[in-house]
Length: 416
Image (cartoon, rainbow, N blue to C red):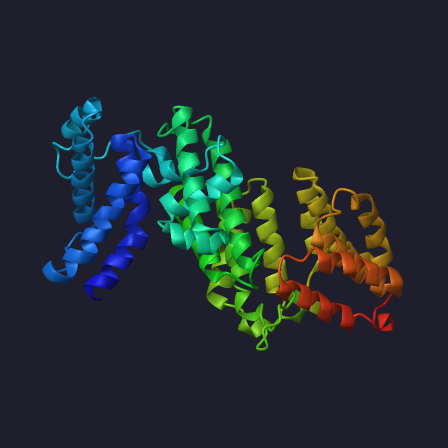
């Protein structure tokens, strides 16, 4: 591995830890972010000349601490910070400090900080990608498909919001931790979903799904006994395993029942199934993400869509409805009902959801398919029109058009 590759690897592995350490030491997000960036820039410059150090993480920590202290010293108006930083820097490299247990890990603290409830969902996603993921502003702009200046403003406002509430670096208490982890999981799933079906380009954004999985792995390493953390990681792995078969050779987006299952990533499937089994063996009632992961495990265990154990899928959704009685969960449950009890029964279950899901594209697509199965062609066409109008990108609209054509002959579907 040459020096530049070593620096890139160190950036992936050390960025979050280093920023988290600097935030804890200096209590300032700007100082932490800038000092970490300067340390990695120094590595790119020095390692090809001096050689890769034996302990890259320690080298980066020492360099970043010096950069941070230099900056504090330059800001004469922050005399108190200067004294504090000088005292902290007396030990080189600094000795770890903070509480024991998961909250003693600077990376977890940083993730929790970026997902503070005081921030909007968009701000949480952006700040997580920047401070935890280490993405640059241009990279985040490309990932989220927004202008660079908008990303910069979002980051600045998020930091200001944390600072205004005196939470720029206040780790959550043990009592706050479960709720804060739930916020983190929501953010990671938002990032993953945007990558798996982009809202403004498409059809896939693998750099976003990879980043979400990397951060979920980090969270799982830090909280291995948290069932919902494990469940979310398993859900992401089992979903991303299907990505190689999600787009056809001609660029068409393929639904689950259209995919070549032989193209699925077997390593990711094996890891995801193992995590699901581990949670089942724990004997603890599963949460939302664990149930969604189990549903995906059932789908990905079947060698052919016709082999899918729909009874098991329905049983899992029955559990999920009790935990999350949302219209979207009810919609997904109705899909399983259609396979077991027929399109007519499932369609009846969709009707009460119409108002709540009027702007939700999958609702109209599902309804269109059920109507087509029943031979109600005119109504199916109207539902397809609604679904296409709500598609987030051209690839999904094209996929719906193909499904619509395939279902045109309703006689090929049983209307039981």
